[in-house]
Length: 212
Image: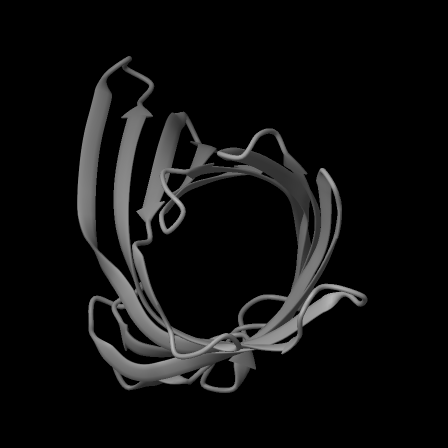
């Protein structure tokens, strides 16, 4: 579950919005190395604004965002060496941002590495996300590709609870409409704090907090 909050000032109006993303996931282990997964994302958005007259307006909305199908394959098992795995996800259904439904609109290729020095786990996750162009009201909208890298440290508090933190660094191309850039190419970095609770040997409860 991801929660983010933003505060905006426009003229004499102050507004605040909060977005909560719920991402349930089903994984199936084909064998010791290969895992396939099905993931969906639901978004809940709440907003409030205070105008110059002191009036407060509130609104909220919840909707389905996307569903993806992917796999992960472990190349090297942790032991004498660092664990290395590769993964890919295909966005099967996408309803983000354009009041429409797109199919097979993007994919992600990634690689993960981790090494354990009990009770600390050192990990590195990086990859590339590609999004297909969209046609919106007769205009060609180019969604920027994104390269991401996330090194982190995980502390095993006890057999049930672990905490992780590290920077989330993302570099993206400039978005464009009809081949004309509407923003600049840029890099974004923010801190990420995770807490994972093991309900059982086969189940996990995961929470992510983004720290700007």
